[in-house]
Image (cartoon, rainbow, N blue to C red; front, side, top):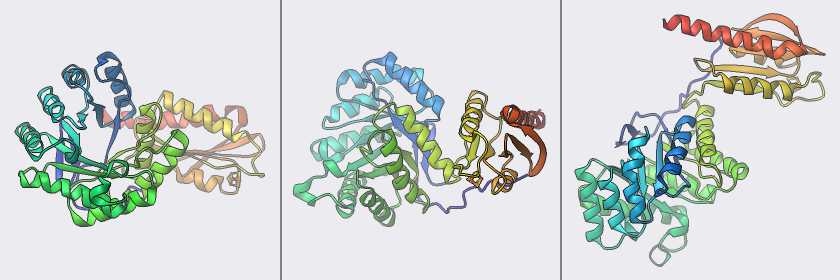
Length: 365
Ligand code: SF4
């Protein structure tokens, strides 16, 4: 069977932290996170959105907790969802305590903005009693400029490590760190530096990355560059819009690096003057059908426009087609199977995909 490269990227060694049923760091797979954009106090809307996120492959979800009603909603939300929930807290440490009481699996705080050391101590003690981890989330936009100066990779790391020391002094070490910036080179450098200076797991993200198109590119470059070097243990793609898109992009980033395999990987050529079939329409239709009925095991499908690179690529995939003038050739398992008219190409390709699925089911029974 053709080979699909699995990731051979050595991961940076880190401690392992537990967030409900999910582990972050150590040998745990890189997890994908997102954040709801509903009001947590609107429990029905929040649960509905989290279920959509779960279906898209979200491992951990975060909700903003700006008031008591949001903290108290956590109990009901948690009872209705299957993934760990993180409470995002700013300014009021009472909300962190209330979130813990209501079952939050992790807190995202910035110890520097929840008041006195005593407040931080109180939150850390309560989290430790419940085995709840804390993410110290430092953002370039909210860095204390009076203390650290202008935001930079270095100041992000200094500020984050100062926060780490506050928790460490209290004996609290179930820590995840994030050092997000809008500027991608700054973000990359900050995580590199943090990775050199501590062994806490890192939550990667490009903050305020923008609308879906720009944000996907910015996030893929920032997060992807780090993951490709083994840095990063959990990721959140931040996009303006439906958070489900964040999860889809996050999963695709992991899939691209072989850190996870999605049910199918569709390879299609960009087409050029040699292409004599409507390849874009064929590729879209193949994708639509695969989304509708995903294969039971991860496979690679190649949809190629002509015989120049087509047969080569198609034969390296599990299943593929290479177009000609109004016809195409179907491949499976590295073998050329048959020539098919253009109008039947998708049906014939999908027959081979279904055949793979049937084989897989047969092996499992
Ligand atoms: Fe052009 Fe053929 Fe390459 Fe597609 S596979 S880009 S049609 S040469």
